[in-house]
Image 1: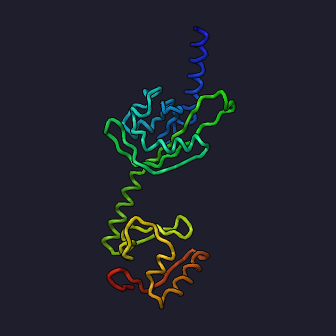
Image 2: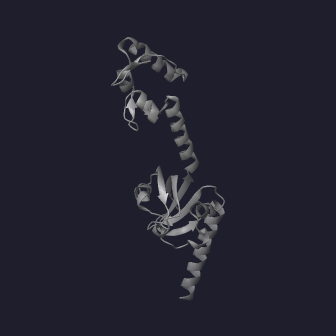
Image 3: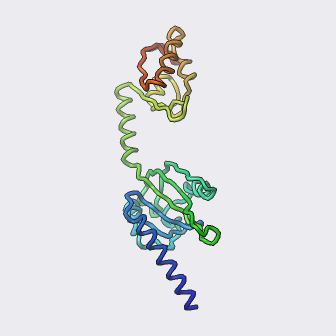
Length: 219
């Protein structure tokens, strides 16, 4: 029994030393958890983010600290050798913190993969400042009557709420180039499409055209 205790103690200390040395000083909140989502290691940034003493979390089930429901799908993907990432709101179970964060989950691989216990690395990037900046941007666009869009996926436009309203579309719904061209006046449509395809090479798109919404035509 004593030998078993010593072996377990040495393995515990080695694991804590490895995680502390690699992860303790990361600026992002970082956890190492088991496959059952019990906490193996929490760095100080995690404690600061959620108002918890991180050094006391070893062996604590994660669902006693955070609502783990939003994390379950990411953990399943990570177990299938993926490295998923998703922005979500993390809610502390004590009700004192609700934090929008970009969460990345990765399974920790060991050399002796068959014998090693499952360990998952969770990195949580605080998005509160970005969320506030986005909210301020949307408010400013509404006041100014202008909108912007991004193209994250080829051929798919992600519009700000004010940009969607200018086209008479529902905010939050992605649009395609064909959706955009469908709003352009027929006499301007060919020119706009040509300019858009040229912009894919030059990185610059500037065009004045007439667009029609459900209520009226505007420039």
